[in-house]
Image 1: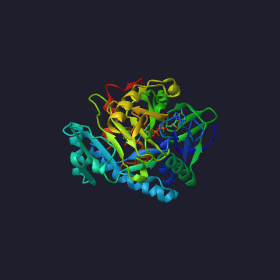
Image 2: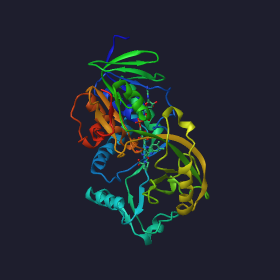
Image 3: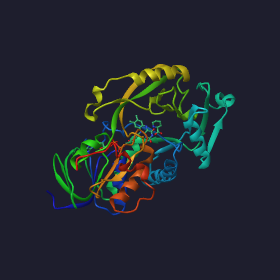
Image 4: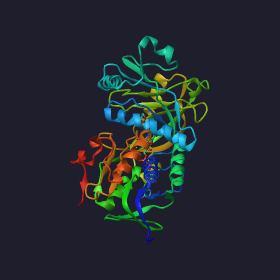
Length: 387
Ligand SMILES: Cc1cc2nc3c(=O)[nH]c(=O)nc-3n(C[C@H](O)[C@H](O)[C@H](O)COP(=O)(O)OP(=O)(O)OC[C@H]3O[C@@H](n4cnc5c(N)ncnc54)[C@H](O)[C@@H]3O)c2cc1C
Ligand SMILES: O=C(O)[C@@H]1CCCCN1
């Protein structure tokens, strides 16, 4: 075991762990970031070229966090000297008189988010090549857009290293011993830290086993589908086509969302916001395509400019909590172990602010937002503790 003691060890170099490590290093904390795979990799939740960034949330706390997150993304762009965000707008469609759509409308108005509300008769003039379903309303968040995900992850990791942070990749954590100094064992070393942050994405519960805690997290595989434009460019970022979210396309179904064609010319990303349960190490054994059947029907009905058969299918994973809200908290027994988990398929855009909040918890500071919606305690009936 090395005699060196880190102020903080962060396990997991996805977007949340990388942003947390960077915030810690910026705050002069001696920080080690451990990653099981050789970087970069495509086995977790943060890979791929693009993610949606938006303020269209029904809950106040997410909108408040997004105000600061946009600023922190802009700061990262300046620090890294690369473009990470492209403004494209986000179109949200949903049952006009449905609870979710009405709540979203009200929240956007209450927070004075620059929003355009589209009437049915003017819809196709603003958004050609999309069929708005009967009974659906539509709004546009005009500041929303696309984050360049892979590029962002690399930039944050580089910035962390430039502040003196240490990344050890290809080192899987196999044991954690809690204590005033937490001892972390990997396949090739033993490290000690005054605090530990666990941001292990789909593997959160595997790591938490070593601390006697299990959270109610469900890991699902997402089929990331790209669809061919019948006329190349119809839905492209250069034609100012927005990202879109279709809330509750049918009763009991999850949202469907899309991003303008950009990363693969001529192909538009359209995905289903849920998948089938999987073990994170056996992701590719999950071959259920029920979500793709739903998407084929949706593309046929609503996106007539796309060939209704996916041209490319990639894989990614969500780690979903019962209420789809994140877990941002200290361990209930070991106050110097901090957990960031359960990002439920919508955490990327919050990366910089989550990094700030988890670093505040790791440094024993009061977090800058009320984290009660993200506490472990809310799962009381689900949480399994063997302590
Ligand atoms: C298809 C798809 C689309 C999405 N779209 C959006 C979107 O449009 N907008 C948005 O905001 N969010 C979106 N998300 C969600 C967002 O990408 C995730 O919330 C976010 O990437 C989660 O990051 P993470 O750091 O928690 O997890 P991960 O990226 O999975 O990182 C965890 C890391 O921990 C490592 N690790 C695990 N166990 C160990 C161990 N024992 N030792 C060492 N390392 C370990 C893993 O290898 C991994 O690298 C999407 C997600 C998917 C899958
Ligand atoms: O977080 C997001 O913004 C997207 C929206 C739709 C579902 C997937 N995630």
